[in-house]
Image (cartoon, rainbow, N blue to C red):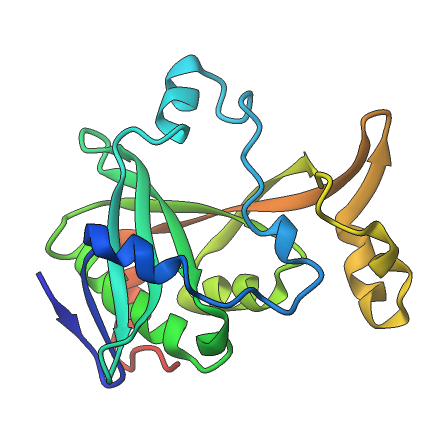
Length: 205
């Protein structure tokens, strides 16, 4: 399987791609430690959910640019064939973020997901302060469902929240007895919504 767009190509993830992804430069973003915080084990309400979240039933695809460089990864986890749904994961190398490549790649992938793969529903969770990602998902048609709050961990320097430029993001953080927490959005997209959104004009990157 290969999906081709004007600037990207999507293909199945291969073992050597892990080595390439390990060489991607780090993000120059103080909020980067928050992007991949694990979901609370109670979120979803079952032991089976926790089992799925820990890596079972996962599938991944590589995203390349026009020159053949590996620039991103799209993955599905919590795959439920019977209910025809899964959870989306997306990672793009820092040099390729903010250029519309992610939107282009996801548009290709969503056509494939709701078309050839015949899924009915796609869900995702995203850190609320990741404004660029939230904007991309919203533009693609994902709708907010609910929020959960996760411990920020030891790698995040909370002092950045005192900077005036990050004032709009402070509403996505709160303190409790266990320390500072950050808000994550749960979002979803149904096949019928995607088909309606794609016709007649389609999406732009």
